[in-house]
Image (cartoon, rainbow, N blue to C red; front, side):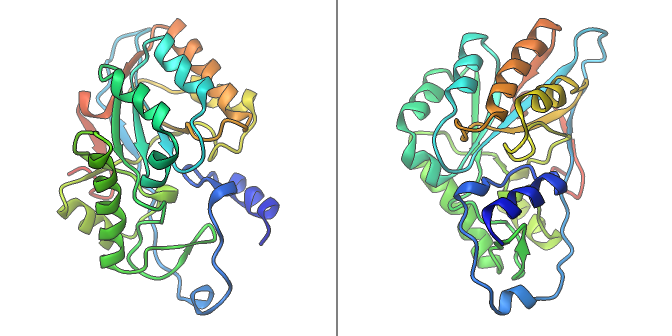
Length: 260
């Protein structure tokens, strides 16, 4: 499947976490014929404010690979909007300047684990949106622990949350990650369709977030139109009196035993 067809498939599926332009596709082979694996894409909600005109929303951003999107980052800093950022080891290596901004604003940014190499945290061999899964419990552990090690080496506090590539898991991998001490970050609003949506639809999706929603978008695709929509939506929500919180700031509820 070429990249254009892959991008179309992602939009139709509503993919939230894959950075399509930078994730290599595996070659056809035995993995392509593997039996179907039951995957889940967990939802996550935070405690509502229950105050009219004062919705509480958690903004989460994936930094998969690529470069930092300064349109989004500068808006978060300028408007003093808190957010939870999920970083991979690969992204950290390429973005020391953006990392410095995160670390210089600990009141705004909570940095959490998006894995070592942006591999789906599924412990059975399969393909998730064309990407080979980790494929074994040992490989899932390496993806999680490798991401955490890179964060610690970069001066980031030990993470408490994990979100895997594609935000899809099998139930056994969820149990394994939870046993490692992590809460798994689902979401309730897909803000930018894997960074593949246009600016206007992205802005509309994010500004539609309601009290208690967890929004997922991307902060690593500065050439995509979606980033413009994300930045505009942040200003829109602030003007509406939205309360922005990080995941560690409030109580939360995730399905599929991702936070129990």
